[in-house]
Structures are given as C-alpha cells and as structure tokens.
Image (tube, rainbow, N blue to C red):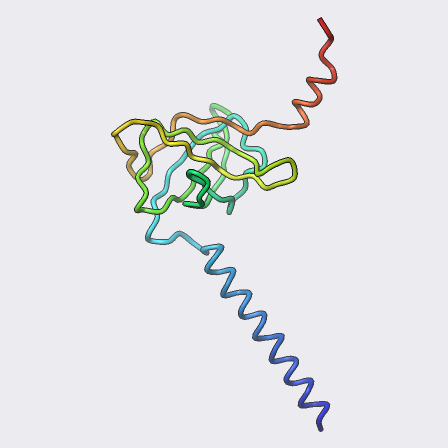
Length: 148
C-alpha cells in the first residue's frame, strides 16, 4: 500500500510541474495578441533567422514579439509583422534590423529610433530596414575573392 501512495505522490508532482511549465510558457510566450500592444510591419530583403516568436528589442530591452512572417510576392521581400508595447512610441524614422546575439546566439528584431518628433501609428510600416547578414556568405566572399 505504501508503494501505491508513493507512486501517486510522484505522479501528482509530475502533473503539478507540467502545469507550472504551461503557466510559465503562457506568461513568457504571450499566447495570442495582447490588448496592451500595437502592431507594426517592416519589409526586409533577408529575414534569415527571424521567426514567429522572436523578440523585438529597443535599446537592448525586449519590447515586443514577432507575430508573423510572410513574403511579398511582388517585391520578393520578407514582411515581418510584430507587436510593441502600447506605452512605447516609435518615431517614424526608426530603423528595424535583423540582429544576432552573437555567433551562436539567437536572432531578434532590433529597433533603433530616429530623431523625428512624428510617431508611427499602430499598423504602419517601418520604412528603414536592414536585413540579416549571413556569416557564411561573408566568409565565402573573403575566401573566394582574389587578392588585388
């Protein structure tokens, strides 16, 4: 009988731990669009490494999340849709770029605000963008370019 009680206790601990992880993932991952954020878009020639759920940073602080990635079939650019906290105003000359945390780190969307006093409205597009830099392409150029 003691064996059944121990197994039941261990099972309850496993279930409680799983529920705890789900609650944590729901808070950190922010399932769905929250009411306290605004949506913006940006087009990139290369959004390599960026994915739905990637973080959006401003001055090194996470202020949002990438919610959608799609392809503009006319210009062949990647369209990134992302949410930013509603209490953060974004100047209309802000630059959005696909950045990396390092050689082996993750990729995120970095916002660099400009000096404009005109702020973007929710749903508007960030015009100034810089796509992802491929480390492999840079190394291949370095190796294959002839010396002059």
